[in-house]
Length: 353
View 1 (cartoon, rainbow, N blue to C red):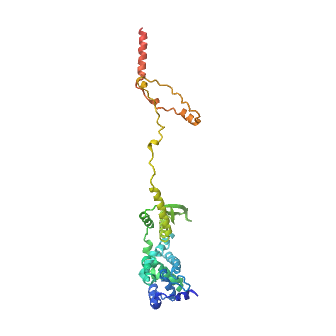
View 2: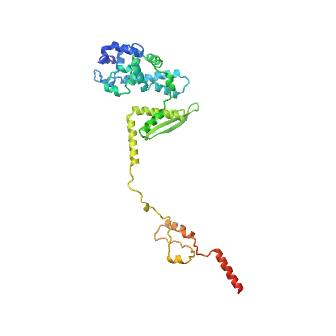
View 3: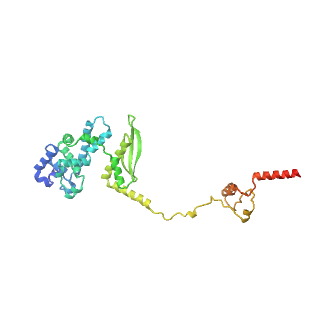
């Protein structure tokens, strides 16, 4: 049994009014659909519970995959031809903005495509990507129905000419870095940009490669002709990964939890200030007799090392001759002038005798 037979066996809700479906699709895509079964699958969300004769789910996810690849090629070609002389970074950003899920979702709503999607009511109200995914699946259905050129005409004449101001989209600056910083600050997670490498292209222009790191988790990577451009692209890829990879968000918040737990862990005991070493203070001996009598300076005898003391300690004790008493001035000792005066008086007394 081929895919057409399987599709024809589907009991879709709009099967009874196939003529009305064809007319609705003609208004949306701009031409009359030939093989309506492709479009029926494109408009079937997995929440509808449709299955084939073998009991396997049948929905628009495969067509969504095909349409996504086609949109990259077709819109990339259109942007390449329209903006001649622009660098790769500009072309990539323009294409990304045109084929983003948000943009495709808005187009699907404006075209009335969302009214034809078959899904459960709960999924319709909670799935913000359902419309954009259906648009991609529709492109896949157009390709299977009438080929690549039909997809090109649909995107170029029906979408980009009638519904989208491509120049406005291209030159509208989207600050992905600002959006990412806003997210990290809101969730109180740490983020940094690390430069991976700096190279040169064939014309000698520098090329920078930056990696976005959130709570130690490597995220998006970007490459550009300036640090700003590279960080913007790294931020864009990070935002895309945060949207489609819940496991990355889990890893980030787990790392944040581990970090904050370590930072907030209390100290078990306060330091004992009295236990600090004070061996840099030299203690001096004081006696009651020394306070009453003049003290003559004496040569300091070397300290005797303790028995079985290590030689290193002995050498240190011999070299340590700094003592506060060496720089203490005793006001009761005679000054040099007093000694000279006393000597002159004694000499004068001998001469007089």
